[in-house]
Length: 273
Image (cartoon, rainbow, N blue to C red; front, top):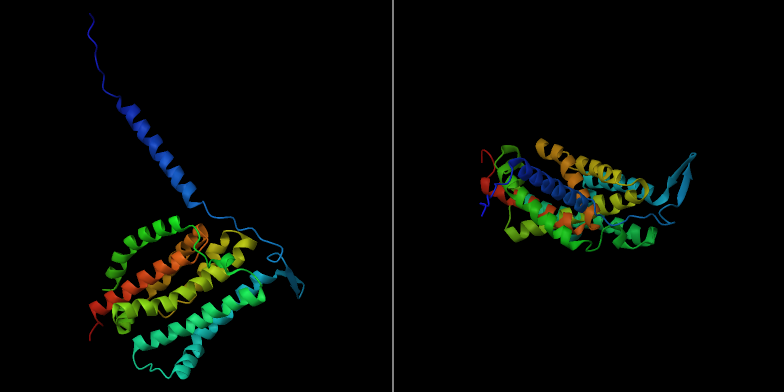
């Protein structure tokens, strides 16, 4: 009876199988990353106005102009002053000022665009990211993102420029996260809901890049590294909202990361204090 000999798998075959599996996994990841909902322009999105010989899409043009105008008003602080006057709240320290500023931005960057969508565009807010969207993808991306960015935020809080800027906003953790949410959630709708989705239906995915530009300029005056990083951060937040069809997930991630940065900066203390 002949002996049966067992042979080991050939290394080249095993390596080839691993390469095929890796390529297949990468292809699935790329397909998943691009699995965004359709953003089809309806007749109202395509309606145009003519100005000085230019035929412009009415909704997208309104969004661009309004974003520029409201950013200028926010920069000069008029709405913050109005909220402080109306409420009688003190702005004696930075934490109180940020809370009042957050309420002002809720009204200015959140309320005004929402009214334009409802009364001016006569459209559904869900078409501008105010919906749950693809919650499975949203939860997965946010959890992965905060797992990566939380230690990064804690590390940057030890950089003197960050500590000097954010430590003065110190308050209890619930107050910090509430104030941060008042500030950044309306901003997410403003930049990546109202502006991004209005542009998206007219110019396509380049809208994700375009919406990151005013977002970056809104960070002028913050630490230089943060200002520069907002180009990449704004793009990733925009991709997240494009992928899920919702601004909820970028709002949650942004609130958590910025809140952690404030709390970690407060723990590090103001340099030289």
